[in-house]
Amino acid sequence: MRCFLSLVFFLGFVAFANGQAGIRAGLSSSDITNSNVHARLGAHAGVYYRQELGFFAIEPGVQFSQRGFRGNDRDTGKRTFERLNYVDAPLLIRFNFFPEINLFIGPQLSFLMSRKYEFEGFVDTNKEPFPKTEFGGVGGIGIHLPYGMNIQATFDVSKNDLGDYYPDRKNKVFKLSLGYDFF
Image (tube, rainbow, N blue to C red; front, side):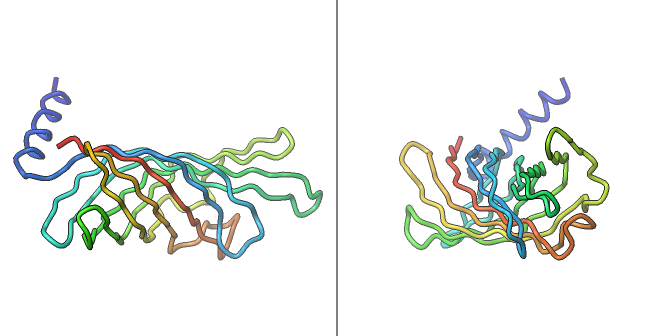
């Protein structure tokens, strides 16, 4: 009951504040910097709230994001796969150059939720050597479509490295998203 009342309060606040809440989901391609690994496809999905302020808008959000890469083992040359699942919290500033097109940039805080490393049937899910939080930046372009729909292309890059397993390497992700504004 408490969750339901919180949701009703939140939706009422959002509608009253004359902002736009919505959902966004899409595909991502991720790998790490300073390496010869290959990108790995993943998915992302989440919610956002956008407050238009004339020429620009502020948009905080929360989303689940898959990152990772595929590469070859140094000793055997056989395929390895790394999957890192995060909850991202971006805070975007959108610049509305045209009514339909905007550019955005902002910081992002990410929380590591799970990890899965695969090599010839061996699976490692230990996430201890990885930082539990990651700070980075987000930038991209968005296009407003009719009926509350929008699409965007985003590039995320982390500022801190991936810890003991991958020193001096950072996550980088390219995302294509489809969104829908509720209000």
